[in-house]
Length: 117
Length: 110
Image (cartoon, rainbow over all chains, first blue to last red; front, side, top):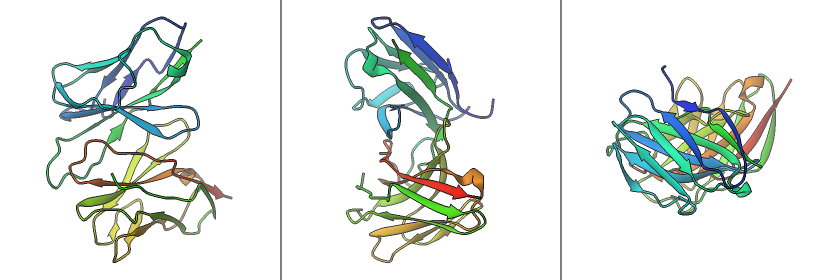
């Protein structure tokens, strides 16, 4: 597809279970980002990938959260032992590689809505 | 990223220009002003960005004051589909982490 694709679009899980959220970025976009958005709130930065490496993991809220990216393409965000506070929409975005004149234009997916019961 | 301040909400009549203000008094010389919007239940959408000069594209115009401490996003002829939360962000050109604040909820009224 032409845009950023995320799956699943909706996930309901029980407290304590692990979940995996997937992001397919725009082809050719080497930069990939994960954000979290709780209901009625702004976006929280989680992690940034340049290629397959993650130079900035500063936003991951705890060691229950991890992310990986392979083939400079698909990324997976994994949340272990989910808690009710993890309920949110998880947004993925991609962009071209950063340069001195980069526009900072991020292309976002529609998000994965996670509900932890 | 520079701290930005936006009004929490604004209304605008359909067909009129919507002028959304943003204060970024602490913005540094190499930081751009970016605008995104988020329509309900969708991912954010890039609108426009600028450094010093005013900018215009097919979606909007961006007016940046000479001292760069504030800016205004202008939607020249607002439509009902422009109802969204609008985010103003200050970040360097190669910034990899854009900080989204609370934004302005713009409601376009028929």
